[in-house]
Length: 112
Length: 114
Image 1 (cartoon, rainbow over the protein chains, first blue to last red):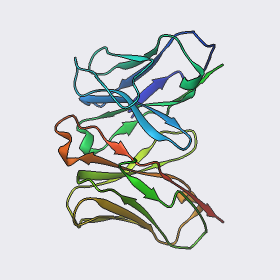
Image 2 (cartoon, chains in turn green, yellow):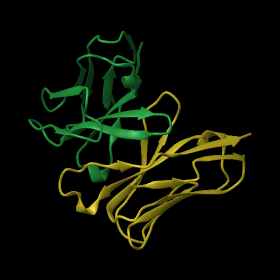
Image 3 (cartoon, each protein chain N blue to C red):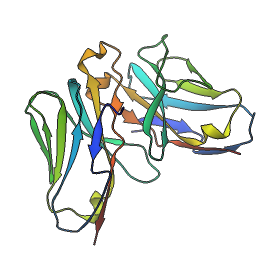
């Protein structure tokens, strides 16, 4: 019953540092997504992968890169963290997006 | 411009009261979903509606999809403190093709006081 697993749960970075957020799903879902959630802004799509081997930009991709490592894993990389990237990051997966997403429990990132 | 507008943004009620949350758009959706998010957790899918006029019930929660598939409502009967959370609507645009991206509303933060 793991569903979508995100690591780490919390992270503090200094401006300019890099890090990778990891996401893995065990539901054999085709599509995976990365969102950020900020107060008053709602959930905003950063990148998504409709199927293994493909990735596409979402609404707010600047400053981020992604890798769909295999069908299970989809990672999000911040190459040079900025304070504006302080947020809660959610990974989600779906068999088909219009059937609904399963979300992970989030990574709370603070960039100082 | 927000594609999906949710109202109200905040709602604080007493236990036992009824409430309705709305999700509106000028766009047509092939499906619309409702999620509940509790503090420190990710959103959890409550329901998906796909047919115009469709009504689904989940215990004390009633979900309705508008006839034109542009809007939806969530009605809670006799709210309980356990219903407290952020309620999000999300839709798959009919014009979105096969990329299956969802558009999310900003949410309604519901607080049910004992």
